[in-house]
Length: 366
Image 1 (cartoon, rainbow, N blue to C red):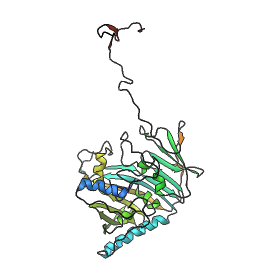
Image 2: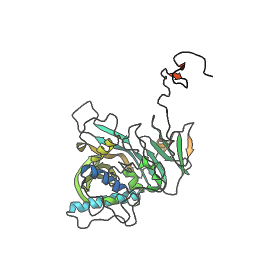
Image 3: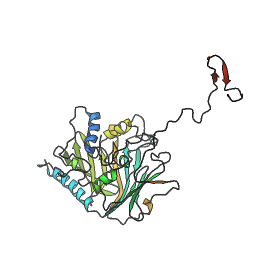
Image 4: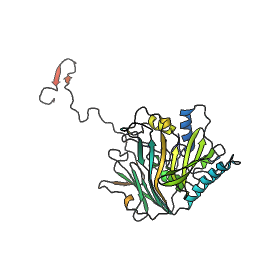
């Protein structure tokens, strides 16, 4: 599946543009995390080309929490522009590791080319992040809200949006560590909401909390090149294209070395469609290959002074504090619950004598 080397490195959460009422994400066990880039690339390449080779791997695997070997940079770039592209990616990684605080108004976005003035052309799902070193974090996705507590001793999260409440009235309350990393965030049933099976963990979380972010792109088999610069969100950006296993990603990096936009392989839209994760009003018959799937980091700021008030989680009277989210057991709901039962007859032991006609008022059977 397309994961951080992969398709959205996004990681929704939830997201994955999930429509309310879709199948819940599978639970994960503590400490268990599948190889994200391998799964991501495998999912896309299996759709695009069954004969495509498997995703690259290292001794530790290009996982979200990369192994000790670190990125493997290909030597001998073919042009000065290619060399500059790799330097830009490395500078962007270094920038995020130096940040004392960060905030954005991010969105997972699908843009559809269309001449239709009525049908929507852009679908956006919130994926906002705020961070203040060493351990203050705020997350606002479609149905997921998470933030450090007022006394800075716990990290709390709720999952609720209209009828979408996979954990009912539970409120996650976990002890806050001295510093944060991505592995800590995705442990627990909170994990599938952040590190989605198709979109992966949001790129901001990877850049901030993965010890070796996007290492899976910095391998000898990746073709990294520089595209023409463009502007996004009123910021001039250099654009770095990465082609790996026949899939294409584009990083939009501004003069501060912050990511402003992160384009993902359009094949990921097809995966979202297969899993019924597109918005309910997504135009039927859209050519996914002509659509754009991206993470747009509107108003991204390096080292801002964060106003945490808009990030606080509202409390509900019937909330149940829990140390880990627990899915409710499946309910065996009778099909006729809350419906009027049709009339029926009840016969005696001989199978012929009718002792009750439910449509007729009579005394109870003794």
